[in-house]
Length: 222
Image (cartoon, rainbow, N blue to C red; front, side):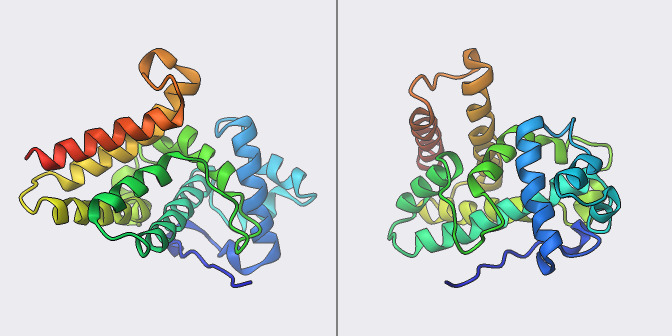
């Protein structure tokens, strides 16, 4: 079985967790614990206990909990970027690729056996619940310079280029897809927790249909 390596900026860790067994265990346990108890209640001490290790061992890899969350979310965008590239190879038109991209943003992820220490489905749910917390901070400008949002930007760039293939005169590709990606996360959250803020009565299929219609109508009508 081939091993798939996802590259994350070295500004997002003290020591690359992908290079050691302990680092990989920290990633795996952090995803499951954060998904279970939420970002606010997670601590490095709790991660260390779950690993039968120490709090200090987690700090060797990450400066703080915020950096850990940023790493996990950037890892997710990097993996999604690879997944989209693989899927796009089997599709012809930019419209088909956009439809598939929106499905990948919303539908549950299958386990990728090439990355045994990461549960992509659990990580996807974590992104839905926690993603805004990595940029709604006073440090956002400095962290932007550090590359905290590169994965997100690359996804927006990729989808924006598809929009311009459909309509070269379309003026708002980055605005559109930063909105679509944000809506893909928020609508999933609203459907589960604040249902009056969503019309997705049939669940994720309705979210995909809504986002696809909104996206293609915006691109094709300009």
